Picture 1 (spheres, rainbow, N blue to C red):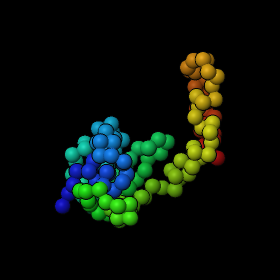
Picture 2: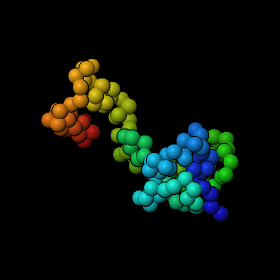
Picture 3: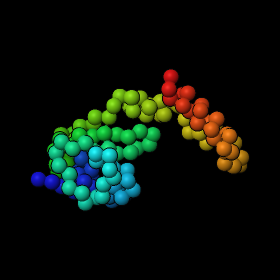
Picture 4: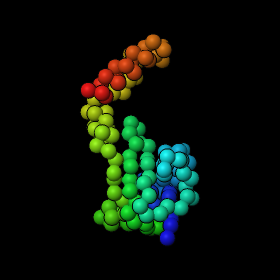
Length: 131
């Protein structure tokens, strides 16, 4: 048995609406085996689905298939999150650090950063992420 990936993403409650799941697939945010998938791609059990949710990529193992949206309790049986702890740590750091947004610290009206400023900001961010 197989099911469309956009239907499964919606049924497993990884996206709030089916159209959001469809748009994520069309936008290249959903991948299987390193390749972007179209919304109609058939999905099978035991496949690993990668979903890009900046600043990290989440990994999900397909444990079950459902064509219809199910309750949150049953949805937990359809999917298992296998995202590495290092990725989740990056997400936690980004949530805790309000200055993680590079442009939030810039003065309003100062325009885009120059190439030199951008490189300096990226260097600072790398130092924050790699303790």
